[in-house]
Image (tube, rainbow, N blue to C red; front, top):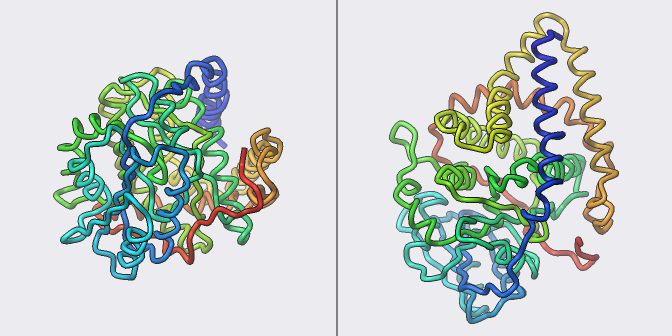
Length: 403
């Protein structure tokens, strides 16, 4: 491996893990402060498209939230589903109080559906929840407590995998998800500039959403409306406009991992398009971020675009085995970090998996970079929702809850 590639990998590793851990460590008290007497009105928005019966369980989970019922409202926006999702949402509206179901006149995408509710709502806080997500009873209050100043515009929750032990792929995905939440966001959490808060569970100040609404409403590429990567784009836009964003690890929700390779790669392709668009756009203003975050952001952009070229070059030069061994060693280290992590050991057994199941990432990651990055570049104008095709809802088991 060339010295330049090795040096670049070292810089990315140092900034993402070492600096990120240090910043998180020294700023943890400030970033985790809470306000306990803040109880604003809240509207939970659930954008819906072809989720079937799982939408009923999602709405049902809201009835168990630890929050004043007279201050909590739920609005489901169906984006012209072609299955029975709308009927199940209407059933939930009949069965539970303060639930409203809207249906768009045509398929307009997730963000425009949410914008519709934001415009009509009078609540101070808007909470976005994906239609396949089940929210833990204490999650909403944990989100609300993090709005400690007017400059904090969004607070995201911690997403657990609801089907971790379904098969080898969901086990791998469980570890990948934990690493992404616990390690890879340390730097962003430390400087309160989280660049992507999940659409599965994120709370926003309505006033900020209204301020940014004209930009959000007309997002497109070459005149084609974009329906992917809305959560990443919105979070980035909030940070770009000088607001702070937070991640509340104790605000928990559950979502299912894709159980097949086809569903997994469809999801990764959608996310890869989102990353490409985000990084290209971010090059115009990355210098406004915290210096360490700017370095992190630019290095990850370079990884995204350079990695396929590096991999193909090493294959052509018959040096891929050497690179693969280094990658295997890194994957093994990350798997052991997951296995030994204190937060993993506190999880109930049903949420944990054996670290060996992360080793296939040694093969899956290079394949995804070689195939998905070029494919994503060629299909940036896609307007599809590309839902994962769930086989069932993300239920909260009675075996025990995470702590």
